[in-house]
Image 1: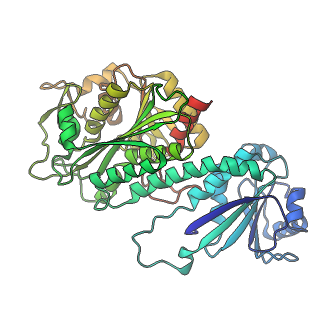
Image 2: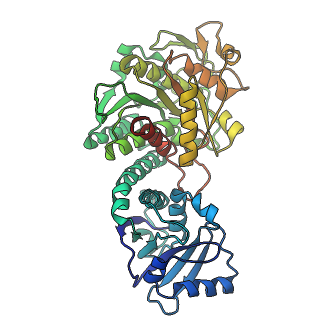
Length: 498
């Protein structure tokens, strides 16, 4: 895989050198423009396919080295399959798929995005570039020895099409989204000794360069507001907690109510006094995947100048077990005034979100709120790592999230809420307790959060299975996936821009 991708757009012209990537169908046909770019390629593809028993199924490829009669080094032939398969092509996935086929030694490649069965659109080309940028991502800043010389090379990737001008314009928004995803991945991948709460807040504050308004609340400010739930989580750490509010006002009516996204930002989670087992604890540096997504989303929206009013808020804490740490049996008072009995200090993310949700709904009166959190292992038992769990008090919002998930590939599955589950978090000593026990663990966590949103349309996304350590895909080979940035960017676009 390449270390850095330099991407450009052009018209379809004759290709003289480097690697060429072309598209065919199950009949091994190529378009006239592809034939003009690589004279004789049609017959060459059929000969090579016959020799290699290549059947042309969707997104399979044929590699032709030193092609006879051409000056390019290599031709990679990607099939879109049958006509109906081609019409359903996920062009983001296709972009990642193609970059994954390029050798690490490649210095330049030209992708001829011209199809044998249909005309390509500017949005399809732009989506292809999004997938290419996402697939090219690597996180190797702490490796002092590279695996090979190719790791430091820059690949110049040219996207040739008949819609190059419009594709370049559409590609700018996809570049902004890709940069937002890459930022979220960087944050999740960072080690916890580098990305502790104060450092995370400073990283988020860098969005000011894009025009995002930043407000950072320190411990003193949060105490004044009565955020006992959030502050209780971080009181065992030498790193002070932070609440970061990011505001992007891009709508025509800058005074209109915003939409709001809230992220859990536990930069490292030992479990506190209810300490986790040692095995796999290093992965708990990723327990801020929700906050990382919100920061990445705000970057994407600001970079593409989204015509939207959006609040992004992250509660950033570190859950450590020193002599001042919160204990099981403690009772804390949230900003809402509701009291919480601490049953398990490892059920800490919901405490952070409770105060941030209340603060945002109370101060900004958003049209709707969505929180994201690597909240429960229980959601992975239910859904594995293919879907995030969706909980909501609003059917319309839940439906829109589902559709956006199907469109972007960042899929969500709605889980139940109900009074029967809510009873499980009633406490004998306080208004509620912070865990309802083993059964329905992800549901009772969502029920807990619902007590802090009143009537505001709200959705909770449990991303424990998708934000970190998720299965490799055509668009991601990173441990930190940046999951949610594309989903929520799409939701914002459809809400404001249609």
